Amino acid sequence: MRKAFIPISLSNPFYTKDSLRYLFKVYLKEYSSTLIVPCDTLRYLAYEGKEELHPKRLVEQQVLDLTRLIQNTYRDTLADGIDISYEIRLFSEIEKNMAYQNFVFKLNDSIRKDIDVLSKFEEYKNYWCNRIYGQATEKLLSIQNKYILDETALAIYCAEILGYNDEFYAKGRWIFANWIYNSRIDVIEGILDHREPCRRFFEILPETPFK
Image (tube, rainbow, N blue to C red; front, side, top):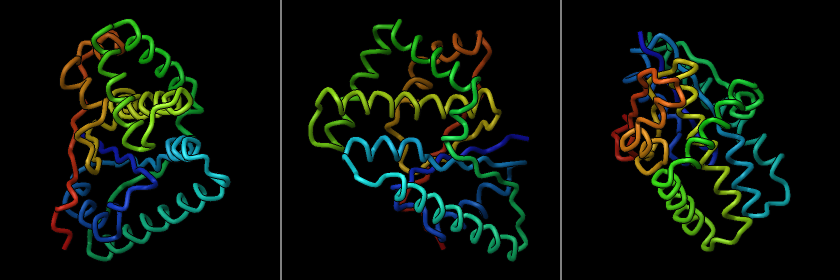
């Protein structure tokens, strides 16, 4: 039976009790287990770009609020007779693992060695840098470079290495991980020593009727 993976941006207003409850009841009940990853690492990078003075306090509170929201939603679905097997694991915990660090190195190396993939990566980096910050200074581009690399590595690593094959993400159509799976799957096959990738992606749209 397949397993599910949900990366959650701490700044994404999409994740409310209603939307999570719908996700739990309609989708996640079909999976043997679900890995929910609050992306604290990415939030720290975003705050670094915006020169936030107290990022640690803000991120810790956001993680606490999200964890409580997930736990409360789980209790509600349990009361409805639906038992979801899930684990909450922070991105910062995953990135401490040496296997993950080696995976990021391999992914970055593969991107840098392929001029077409690197060109697309740079396109994503510049687009998001300008959209988020309104400018693309050297510092901001460096931050966005790490952000997109980490975001992409997390998606591939959780699917192909940890075995959480089906990713659910709110409004994730234009993320680099999806481009590389759709357009250059050979890069991922190379990282996996030519094993066939098994990730499937499901976009959760805000207009979904959460009732």
